[in-house]
Length: 223
Image (cartoon, rainbow, N blue to C red; front, side, top):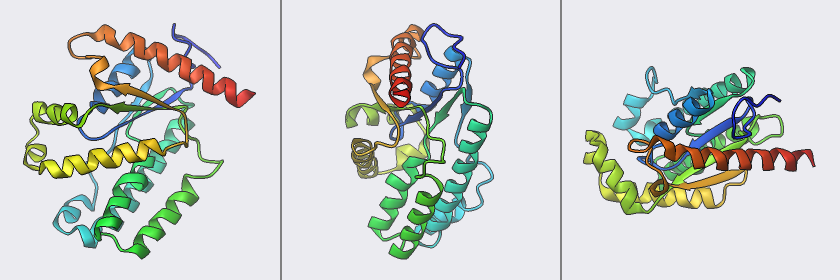
């Protein structure tokens, strides 16, 4: 295990960033990777053969889309560990089943049979001792009003046109999910405690916390 940084974070560490839409996952991913000299892993949207059809007919295509995402994230997770770690990952494989597929099932846009098939596939692929889970999941959190303000300030038309009720439901689902998540160590960061745009040095205390979390986790596993 090599450590080439001042924070005590091993070079083979895998960090995943999670949080609802608009909290700044991509910004945090890039900032941590730049500071540590790690690679980044971002969600691939281009080339998705189901996305356009999904937005036209949720009920017809939700199962296909979720299985596609599961396969792509599984391949990416394998790639990360085949490299030997040293990655910061934007979004986790766990959010799809815990939030999005579950939401479709509860809203009736995915049948109960399809949901159970998807869930069984996810459990067989991911929830096993053989699947390489991240060393740390960083959850970016804040009040709903703070998250909504960030969505408004970045000015993406699709997000501006989406009803506030949708964002509130997504926010609540994320909060419920993270409060019950225990697959790997979790470190919560409030989005008001740093400003990576105006003050790049605000990443320093985050890196120090990450180092402590990762070291404590690895020492616990060894013990």
